[in-house]
Length: 364
Length: 96
Image 1 (cartoon, rainbow over the protein chains, first blue to last red):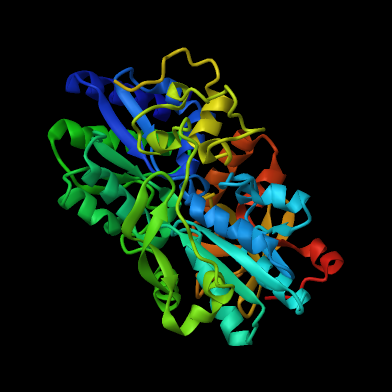
Image 2 (image 1 turned 90 degrees about the horizontal axis):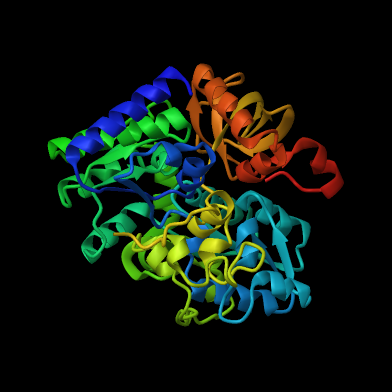
């Protein structure tokens, strides 16, 4: 361990000891979730510091009804569904895109929205439907691609919009009120787009410290120390300890494009229900690219497996081992809940990195 | 899925750039980073540059990624979503 890491670790331990109670910090980024395990950060945390993984994995928070709509789209004749890889395995009410593909549906994995548009150019006689999932980091790529399709007059391309916005989700968690949170480790690459100042309402309205941090061990520990300093002093400010890539105001070009293509919309989140203004729908000029509208797909409700506790995991109420399905019918190879599907899902991360956890998993 | 990875811009053409990432060359979209120049480093996510960064920060991040991903370059490529230059011909993918 290098000297900087030890310094941050020791200060974290000292301050948490002085606070003298459980300190609950939530991260809302799947990459932070995995990095905390992968780099060994979790093993360096003081006993009374609880790092909670909130609704930061885009796959995990995609509403089941949107998975069901994607599956329905994939069953339509002449439709090719193009999606980021993790989405193909997320269970809907009846199977997954992966299962539909096994049944003959044309489901393609792409690594960029622009690749989906390339498919539309390549197969002009097919309809390409791209699944637009992800937070503010990913949404600009979808927006640019829709603008490109619009500009190029490409008519066989549409998008199932399921993008999510992180700040409304954080606000909803705090408004919910039953999960105590002392502060937020804010997502580094979402913040590249929205800027650190975007967390103002979380600090001012809810009185919670917000610190934007990177993904390397030193950056994460430093962010946690900055959070704990604020918590100890009873402060609630925004701090940015990832200034190499995150500015106060974010990426102006990306924000402008988001505002051009999308308008905010009440959006369903898996296990969290509909959160006001927490996602997007297409602005009027681009509505022809709305896959639900184009194919007249009605979005239903979510009907989760009653034993699956992904919702409680996403809300930070429990840790994965407290779910009776965890490693007991629900595994990465055979996932029941979305948090076990994505490599960035909290359950998948616990399965991979924390299998020897002996705790009951219930948070005190 | 919100991971963005540093890559160095090798060539620029209109709305796209070829970047070098771990020995591979990928074609990415640069409309979100107007003004980016050859030899600058960018953060790449889902096939798009989303920010420019200093070389020293990029190299530091790469040192971490190499240690953390233990050579799993395929996994990283999946994260950043560029179009491999040598795949363009075989797939017949038109530039977007």
